[in-house]
Structure formats: C-alpha cells, structure tokens
Length: 149
Figure 1: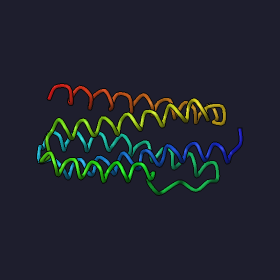
Figure 2: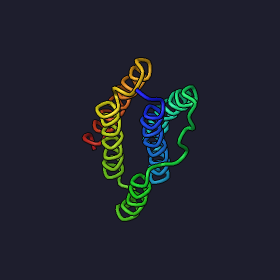
Figure 3: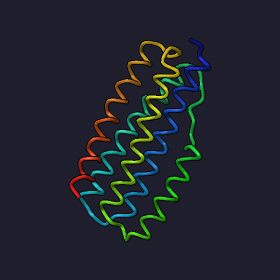
C-alpha cells in the first residue's frame, strides 16, 4: 500500500460524490414536486457527508483532495437537462435519470474496493465500505420511488 495510491483511490470517490451532488442539484432544478426536491436534498446530504470524510482522509495522508467532477458526470448532467426539457420534468423520467446516476456511483465504489482495496488502510477500507452501504440504501430508495411512478 502506498500513500499515493490511497490518495488516488479516495480522490476517485471524491469526484463521484461531487458528481452526485451536482446531479441532484440538477434534478432539484428540473422538478417542481416539493417532496421530490426534499428527497434530493436528503440524498445530496449523503454525498456531502461522504465528501467531508473523504477530504479529511486525503488531507491526513498528506494529499490534495480533488475538487472537480468527472468528465462523464458533466456529460450526464447535460443529458439529464436535455431529457428533462423534452419530458417536461416528468417525475418518473427524473427518477430514472437519478437511478442511473446512483448506479454509476455504486460502480465507482465497487471499482475502488475491487481494484484499490488492498492499497487502503484498514480504517480507510472500513470508511469506503460504510459509505458504499449508505449509497446502496440511497440507490434502493430512488429505485423504489421510480418503480412506484
């Protein structure tokens, strides 16, 4: 395990949480449904907490936390904006887009655990696993809401 590899892995998770926050900000702007907006704020809070923990972990390793989003996340948000414009803010479509974003976030956590798990300290591995569980709960919540529409 090297510090540089750990920082890289944690920064990958910082980027996906930045993507997720930006995605939910987009989703909030695309709906007028107050319950849905409240849910999106709650889902953003998961990533804000994750970010706080990940940023602290990177600083503790002597690294510089990533501040940007991923290129694919930017493309996804542009696509979501266009789709929302075409569907008129349809709740099912917005939730479908959000579920797609949740799938991407989960895959990123799984990638980090599979490909970089041996590079992380036991404490960082525990942190990433706990965050992944929280992300799975959020994913399941979005999927359930989408399926109910």
